Image 1 (cartoon, rainbow, N blue to C red):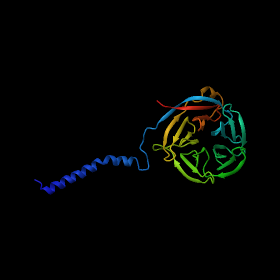
Image 2: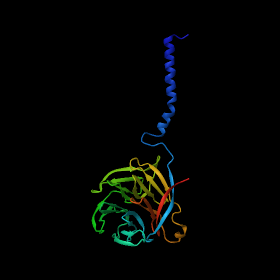
Image 3: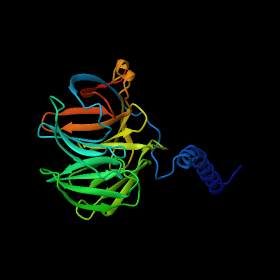
Amino acid sequence: MLHGKYFIMLLLLLAVSGISSCSSIPGYENDKYPAHSVKPQSVPAYSYKIVNTYPHDNGAFTQGLVFENDVIYEGTGLYEKSSLRKSDMETGRVLQSHELPAQYFGEGITVFQDIIIQLTWKSNKGFVYDKSSFRLLRDFTYATEGWGLTHDGERLIMSDGTSTLHFLDPETFSTIGHIDVFNNDTPIDKLNELEYINGQIYANIWQTDDIAIINPQSGQVSAWIDLSGLLSSQYYSEPVDVLNGIAYDTVNDRLLVTGKLWPWLFEIKLVAAE
C-alpha cells in the first residue's frame, strides 16, 4: 500500500498528465492558426436587386466612379482615350470633360473635399484637379501601379492590382500605411476599383463579377457581393468589358455600379444570398 504522501504525489502526476493531454487539441489549433491569422469562418454573401437603370456612355472604359450632388464623376482608361468627366446621372449626358495626355492610361479617381485625384496605370503618376473647373493643380508619384482610389475622410486608399491596399496622405501623397486583404487565410489579389461605404472598403475584383467588402483595420473580407448577370447577355453582342465601377450616394443610401464600356449604370439593393 502507498504511503499517504506518495499517494498524493501520484495523484498530482496523473493530474498534470491529464492537463497536458487535454491541451494537445488547442495546441494543434494554435499551430494551424497562428496568432496573426483568423480561423476560417463563413463569410456572408449577397446577391442584388436592380432598383433603377440609368444611361451610361458605352464608350467609357470605366476605371473610377464617384457620385456627388446628383452627378457622376468618372475616370476612364485606355491609351489615347483616357479622361476625367462629369455626367448627369439621369440622362448619362457628359457635362464636363478633361482628356489625359495620350501616353497616360487613366485609372481610379476620388473626390476629396474640393479636388479630384486621378491615378494612372503604369506611369507611377497621379493628377490633382480643381473639382469645379477640372484645372490641373499638380501631379504626384507613387511606387506601384495605380488601379483604384477612394478615401475614408482622412486617408486616401489605393489599390495596385495586388492583394495590398495602400493608405496615402491626401496632402503629400506619401504612403502612410497598408493592409493585406484576405478571405480568411487566402490573399485576395486583383483588387481594382474602390469605394468607401459606411466604414468598409468595397473593391471590384478584376475580371470577375465579385465585389469584396473589406474591413479597413484587419484587411479581412467581411462579405461578398455576386453581381453575376447584372448586364443582360443581349448587350454582349456589342464591345463590353468587365464589371468595374462602384459609387455610393451617402444622402439617399444608393449603391451604384457599372462596367467598362457598359451602356447602363445600375442602382442596386443588396439581397442576402440563399
